[in-house]
Image 1 (cartoon, helix red, strand yellow):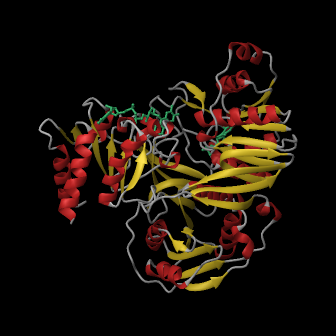
Image 2: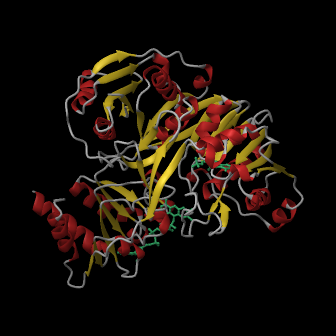
Image 3: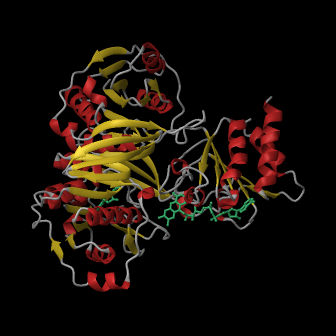
Length: 260
Length: 318
Ligand SMILES: Cc1cc2nc3c(=O)[nH]c(=O)nc-3n(C[C@H](O)[C@H](O)[C@H](O)COP(=O)(O)OP(=O)(O)OC[C@H]3O[C@@H](n4cnc5c(N)ncnc54)[C@H](O)[C@@H]3O)c2cc1C
Ligand SMILES: Nc1ncnc2c1ncn2[C@@H]1O[C@H](COP(=O)(O)O)[C@@H](O)[C@H]1O
C-alpha cells in the first residue's frame, strides 16, 4: 500500500505571528518553523497503517527551503521517502493554489491513501484536503477520529458537532485526521540517524508540471485589502474573593450587562 | 438585485440558528436565496427560512444527496452558481461548511474566504486571525465570492420573505459518490445548546480537578442556558468529552458571554475564544494570563465562586 502524507511547516505555535507589511502574507522569517502539530497525527496514522499493511510512506510538503527540516522530522519518525516542492514562484499561494500544486505533485504516482492533518495552525482554513480530493476526483474521508483499512476498503469515523458519521470508500482516498486519533511517536536517535540517508526528491514548479499562472500571490483568488494589529484589550475589573462574595459580584456584573 | 445564496444548515429537518444569521446578512448584500440539500424540508423549516427573508428556497432533495459526505452539497451549489450567477455564496463556518466552500471554489474557479466575522456591502470580509491579535479585511478577486461566516457573528433579525420553492435537479457525478455515509452516531448532549452556536459558554479547565468537578460547571451553564466548554488539559485528562474542547485544535467559539473557570489562558486556548464579546474569568492565580482578557474577573477558588454564582443567578431569575 502506497501512502502519502502532506505536511506543512508553520511558525511555532508559541511564537507571536504577524503579517508582512509589504505583501500582507504571513511573516515566516520572524518565527521558528515547526511541523504543523496536526500533521504529526497524520504521519503517525500513516505509519500505523503502513505497519499493518506492509505499506510505504512518502512525505510531501510545499514550502520554502527550510521546510525540508519538516520532511526530515517526518522521516525520523519512520517515513520512507520525501518530496519537497520548492519554488520562489509559489510564495503567496492561497488554499486554491496550494491544493492545485499539491494535486499536481500527487497525481500519477499511484498513492492509495493521501493523509492530511485536519487544519494548519497558521492558515486555519481546513480546506486543502477537501480541495485536493475534489481536484483528484477521489474519495474524501476527512476529520477522521478513527481509520480502518481492510483491503481496498477504508472506513472512518468522521467527527461531527453531534458525534460522528461512519463514512466508507474504496482506495484511492484522501484522509484528514483530528488530534484525538492517536499519540504521535517521538523520533528515536536511531530514527534521526536513519532519516539522514532517506531519499528526498526536490521539485521545482516546472518539474511538477505546474502552470505558473495558477500559483503565487499574483494568481491568488482572494486578496488582503488591509490589516491592523488589534490593540490589547482594555483591562477589565478584577476583584478577589477574600470576602467570599465573588460569586455574588459576578452576578451583579452579569445583571448590569443584562445577561441575567 | 442579484441573489445571494445561503446554504441551509439543518439537523434532521430543523434549521439551525446560524442559517437565520446568514439570511440576515444576505439581505444586506442582495436578495437572499436559501439552498436546501437533502430530504426533510417540511412546512416548519420553510417557515423559518421565510421568517428571516429567504425570497427563494432552492430545494435539491434527490434521494442520493444525503448518502454521501460533503461533495454533493458542493455540486448542488456549483450548478446554482453556474445557472444563477449570484453575487455571493454564504456558508456557515464549521468543519463541513468550510469543506463544501473549498470544493465549490475549485469547481466554480472562484475565491474563498473562511471564518469571516463580518461582510460589508462591497463584499469585503472581516477576519480575526492569530488568536484575535490581528484584524484582516479581504476580498475575493476571482469568480463568485464564496464566504464562510462564523456562527454568532450577526444578530438574526426577522423580515418576511416570499420563500418560493424552486426544485433543483442535480445529477451527481461519480466522484461525488465516492465517500458513502453508512452510519450516524449522535452523542448524548443533554439538552444544552450547541457549543459553536451558543450565546453563552461556560468552560472549565485543569482547575476543575476531576470529571466530577464538571458538575459545578454544568450547573452554572444550566442556570444561564449556556453550553459547556473545556480546555485541552481537561479533555486530555478525560474529565470532559473531546468534542467540547475550545481552542486552536478544538472548537472556535464567539459567544456573547464566555465564562472561563480554572483555565490559565494559554495562547492555544485563547485562539478559540478570544472574539467572545464579554469574558468573565474565575481563577485562584491572580497572575493567570486569562485575566488579561477579562471584562470581569474574580481571583478565588472556583469551588466557592461558581456554586455561589449559580445560586445567585437562580435567585435573580426565578
Ligand atoms: C499545538 C497545540 C494546540 C493546543 N490546542 C489547544 C486547544 O485547542 N485548547 C486548549 O484549551 N488548549 C490547547 N493546547 C494546550 C494549551 O497550551 C494549554 O496546555 C491548555 O490550554 C491548558 O489548560 P488549562 O488552562 O485548563 O490548564 P492550566 O494551564 O494547568 O491552568 C489551570 C488553571 O486553573 C487554576 N486553578 C487551579 N485550581 C483552581 C481552583 N480550585 N479554582 C480556581 N482556579 C484554579 C490555576 O491557577 C491555573 O491557572 C494546545 C497546545 C498545543 C501545543
Ligand atoms: N504547503 C503545504 N504543503 C503540504 N501540505 C499542506 C500545505 N498546506 C496545507 N497542507 C495540508 O493541508 C492540511 C490542512 O491545511 P489548511 O487547509 O491550510 O488548514 C494541513 O494539515 C496539511 O496536511
